[in-house]
Image 1 (spheres, rainbow, N blue to C red):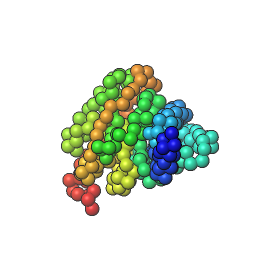
Image 2: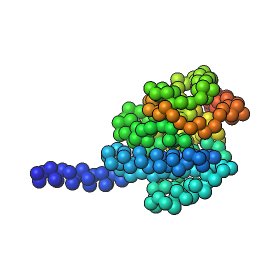
Image 3: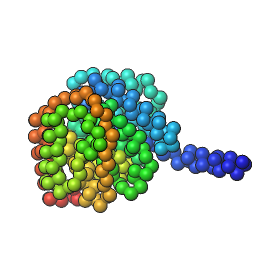
Image 4: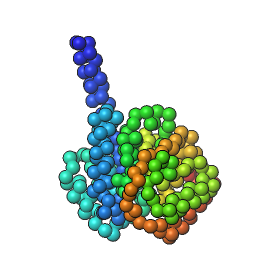
Length: 263
């Protein structure tokens, strides 16, 4: 009994000494309708992961970027209600790339996860990313909704657009990933190094991160996430944004071919 007590105490002291933080970065743009639900879902999953000893401490880093609704005001209210150090709020110019870079470099964790601001339609996403075994054989893990075993109720036009973009991206950039537009998790030091070389300000920054990880010889893995059958579609396909994404992929290829990423 004494030996077990000493062993348990030693394990506890070791855990306290590591002081590891799991950072969740959330770029937020015009997401007022889903934002409170998103943050609540993330907190529930982080607390469960903490109770299951999957993470010791955690922080949420939210970055409002160019919203025209009351996204920022809602984030300010959430920040006031959460314990200090649990929630950090920043602002950048409009663009996923701008927000993601700011969030990554302001985060203090040893591991970092990037998630969307409409998370409630996905279950167990944060719990999965907190899993200690997930990064044992990989440097960067993308969580793919397209490989989900459950239909998550997206409109057919969005599914079709996503599939077309994925095939186009993989052809242009010589990649084999199904979904780089979703969420990812990785070791902080490696993600920061990759993000410091990114240039894109918009949606295709995650494609850029995947390509930079590939040319840096990092091990990339893609795993499916479990999605619920019902969800609220926040928007329809914006064909102007789709065009920007297609052009963005071509710009990434140009930079790669001209070794701009290596300069």
